[in-house]
Image (cartoon, rainbow over all chains, first blue to last red; front, side, top):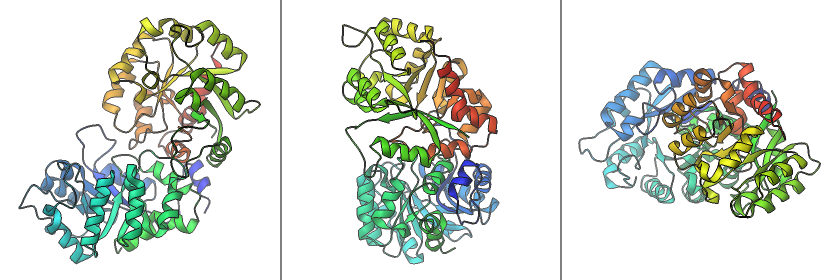
Length: 257
Length: 248
């Protein structure tokens, strides 16, 4: 595939399955986002030939968990087959049960952002009921994983619940080496590409260290755009086969699509 | 579409990440891969070590190389540490240096007129654009103060992240001398939004090579939902026009 031609002609990739494992809907209090409703996310995905995106609600992570999960449900309902849902728990509410959302069609995993929820470590026992459901169903759990401590807490969850599929958002970002280390020791850990600012040749490092089978395309849309991450993968010095795995084939297996 | 990168650093820097480009050859390979014709370049030593020596190293590293447009790093002329404004302008002319980059936070100086007034007057008179990254400024208010203190100087502020629109849009509205480097401006639909509100003339393509991603930077422009004319302005037109107006 002539990736360069598509990019420099500004045309979306064709003939390739693209599935984004790291998306959001909803507003975010600290700063203005680009279009953040389901319509905006779906429009960009369609424009860029993205076959599917799994979204969590930013308000579900940082505000009212129930209101936010309803926002995800409405988004999934509005764009079936394109927008898929992550359900997000809140550790501060004993009555928080996200199972009813996971029972809905189109909900395919769990998203947890401990940093937004009072800097709660993701291996805090208050999250365990959610992991037990995910483990029983073999669901992916996407973690915000930025710092070394966050990566190690996520790895602890991966070891406790081996039937879950743990996705380390942002490749561990400032703790990439830690993320790569735990991915090498836990077969159920995957690494996503959602990084706003990184250097060329960074995708190559991920593939070299853990193999293309363990790297999945995540954009963090609508937190930021998806197009720069697409370019980083498409122009990386890795094989076409590896690019296709990262863009969607790995996610197809992860989410049993 | 021709891309000219407004932010590239040459030279050996202190900290590098695994597989990150370091040498000029590695940077050129990335420029070729991402179809970047030329790049405005300053030297790592001028930022991290010795400003004057770094500027001289830049001349050596770019000797006879048309892929790089020379940029010097400047300090305020205080008490003999850096060349006078007159010496700076003379040196720029003799060595085909067409723009200035400043690191007020890293290099520890004030941007206020008591410290930089004479220097900025010269930048305005000779139409020399001044480049900075956003993290070199203390705040959005410091940016606004600089833009309004020196309204005749064209500033290109780069490495603006996806978190800054609430702060920077009002400044863009009030300060026509404020231009944004696009390299790390990854807001969802952000390039399109910026064009709609402020016009493509306010954006200048840059990469931040070798620590930024050229692949990401070109994709942000190529895939943006804007016209070909707007893309051309951002990719090279605005910068070329600005540099063509420099009078030395």
